[in-house]
Length: 575
Image (cartoon, rainbow, N blue to C red; front, side, top):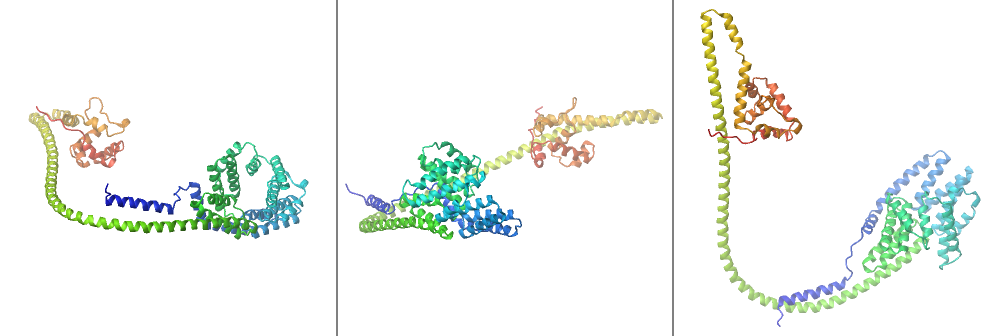
């Protein structure tokens, strides 16, 4: 079977695509939202550090303005807590200042609290012997119950580090650490801020049930703004509990949450969660080495700026391993690139041959195409002319339909206007004729009585001629003719008003004043002065009635009059 050049080219491109896939075999994996958020926070870490420095400047100024020993002690404690996770030399300055204040004031509780905090600080920086000596200088009997959780907690922290530096899975330090875990759980109360932190460490590495502690830690973190060092610690121990339970997804999620909080609070002393994440990312392969390097490099820079030589040394070893991973990945990539270049050269030669074949065939196709183009051009011209003619015809038809519709509308409006004029002209002629007859009879009667000098009878007769009755008769005639033309006007008009504010004429009336005003508007008389003259009342009365009715409308008040003018169709009398 002969292979077409186009098919051959497709096979060639597929081969090139397969080769390039080998050069970057790591498939793109969607980044979890918690990792993406952590990356974003690291990008903005300089902003968090600036916020930290501003807060420290405010606290330092308050410390300078403090007068009482208690205020100085409290502000020193706050500054120590802030610097404890940020800058070691400043932290030690404030905790030493508190020890001095405690000695001057003779306050044993302050002294004990400050020694515990300093010992914890020394343990974190690797000065374990100094930390141990400081803790041994504290008399256990002098410790008030409120400080016992901090005392036992620091002993756990100290012996954990001593055991770690000694080496081995079991040694005397780890045994003491376990004993102090039991001690802290015996004195700490569930409402203590660090209760769940110590509870988690008490469970970790044991067969104790962890579900309740995991649940409570999740609830605590969900209710928190996640902006304190305690939040970072709680998220870290929750991640470790999930790791122990075999839930890798939540382990990574809360480890990233702990790291995110550390970044937000500009923690520089110990970012264990971010270190753990860097090792996890490194262990996942080539696709995450860049992120692992970024995380461990962030930790190293923080350890150097703290400074924490012990921590920096531990991070450096991890950084070395990641750097070796970088080198190995680069070697593999270079090998793939060399393989790809060889394959590309072979494919380029094949591609050149394919291009020559395609050029020859394209020459034949171009000649055939030119003949086909000429035929298509002629056909296209004919179709284009036909389409233009058809389009012109459609446009003419559309214009004709629009003209017919406009003409029909104008014709309907003219018919209605003529019909209304006929009805009202006949009615007016009848009314005027009746008035002329009445006036003629009145004139004759008065003339006779004048001749006979019956002036009292004349006065009585003129008093009996009541214009109010004549005006009512005029209104009744107007209402009758209008409702004859627009029988549904009242119902249609009320449909424009709120249901509980619709207008109903009194018994014996066809229309009332409000309806009569809008009946005249329906007939095209919109000027309030003309309406007032017609209804024999003041223009202000017309204004007031129109405003009152508009306030009841359920449609836009600006369009109310126009809507009235379009109400209903007229009824044409065929009599």
